[in-house]
Length: 595
Image 1 (cartoon, rainbow, N blue to C red):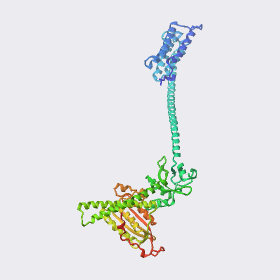
Image 2: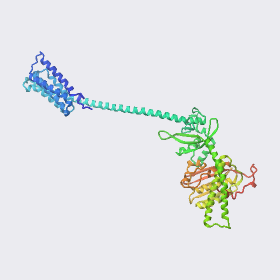
Image 3: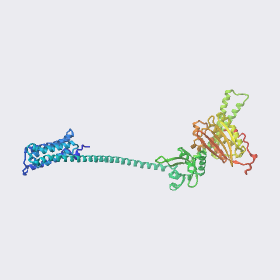
Image 4: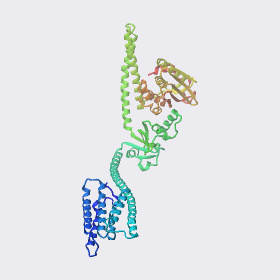
């Protein structure tokens, strides 16, 4: 920014000198006219020469590399020229005394008291020079007053001009600052406007891409809800899979309207059993795991508009608003009909392979037994250890083959049971007797609590014993050395409950609903290297369900787990014709069904 000087702002020195040059030209015209002004041409010529030199200096000053203060030499020189002109044209009676106003205003408008003093001195010299050179004389009291008052009056004027110039200067500074701020603001607005246009273009492209992707997802139903479960988002894939248009569901339907009610009730039962604080709303049964911040991917049955059902794998996640609070949930559902068919074929294949494996495994175990019992050719100690390893691993493999074959039968619908009245107390005692060796080896206390040994259930004793064995085996494996496992029997009205409670590692609440999935292993199982392949509870649930019962699971991490089988109670003399003579002998069930 250029240097500002007084009220003249950024005027050049030549422009400021222009009025003085013009005034002197007019004064010379008057002197040369026939008006008859008394003139001393020597003084007038000297005054003209000073004005011309001052004007030339004003013209070249901007190109000279000298201090800015040299600019004041121009009005000071003009003061000297006015003093000589006034002296050379009659002194006190000169008509050109008013010319001293021009340099006075220039100097007085410059900031600072020093310039007021310089202007006052210039006025005093201009007024007193005629008297000093003898051109004028003090003839009366009025001349004395005029000689003294005129400099004072012009000094007052200089003070006023300086003050006004200072005020104007401040206002100009504020105006320039405001202007600069405005320019910066305009520049910022232009930058912001440009950025906004760029963001707008990017947003349009992103929205276009999102729309294309959104419309292209036809194999997956993407459904959004608010926090109460009311549907707010419905993609074309959902319309294709479920048959509803977006106008029919958005704001009109709940997500629970698309689910099989019995599955939601079962999930709610598990929630309220495993967590006394569980909510009783249907929607809570769907989103409880996701609301806790955990990954929730599982299988549900969805209902189409025409009432047909299809299996779906559903991923559920929370939606958040700009404040980080939950604003709803996103459900991504995939039709699993084809996948289920593939699973069925895999089960059939696994069943076939398992069946084919059982024959050679049984043969291996038979020959191992023959080798072990051959008294004519007894085995050495080392050979016996080898045979024990072969026998142990063959039996382990046979158990795994049996489990695979059983799950294949369940998956293909070929799983059947043959029921008879069974004394549950005897079955539990046999199961506990079979589990004692494993418990002793693991350093776990196993105890039984049987309130009524005469309680009956209508069951397949072999399969039910297998289910209890699985629960006991899991409890012992999940309990560290020094812990305990309790096997309890209780009857309440028409229901019999077989409970297995351990003081082991426990299971996370968000994993409870997945325990019956094939090959699923809880986090605590992998963390503590608990052996197993994840089929035991799958088999157990299938057996219990086939008996018309259910499994209740409650667990606390680090405290233990309780798994309870609830079965309908069988009463003697019931209408199905089965009586006391039909009660199955289960004294050795546990020993026969382990594995």
